Length: 249
Image (cartoon, rainbow, N blue to C red):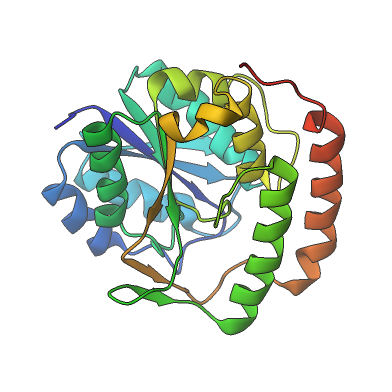
């Protein structure tokens, strides 16, 4: 098993949702994983809580602190650039609320290594044997935007927006080469960047969707229906930027 993998976790005003003991207990069982917390200009006690977590397991936890809030996309980008400096074999990201646990992230990582995939992304596919606990309203909105994403990318992707993805070092260098153009659907932009290096015809040779066994809605999510207009605008931005992108054959 690879001993040099970094998971980026963006944090903005997560003081009340950071599960200190869960993080510590999980990491002790997963010595192959390190966490890079990105404090995205929080104005509550998030940084203080992060420092407390990091002080208890400094060999596996580091913090990148931004004084100004730049949004999740920028936090992931800055975290990716910082993580690459440490030359890990794999880089990924999940959300601070642990809707996807570190154990679940490790399953993605193990699958990427076992199957020799460049990019593995979680999918919230509710099926027999899985526990996908998601509010109906968020599920319906998510399916709408997932359909838009799939059509825009011209790829058969079920869930582009799931906040659990892992990629190898070489792929990460391309994904994090430049800041993301969009904030709300930067995950879709990642797929466009992957299409620049993997041909559409052979995309499945390099990337695969991994159905999660568990995913839980956590109270306090910052995404709501009013953000839909911003998301739609981001789709238009991506179509203008990448719509005519020619991928390698």
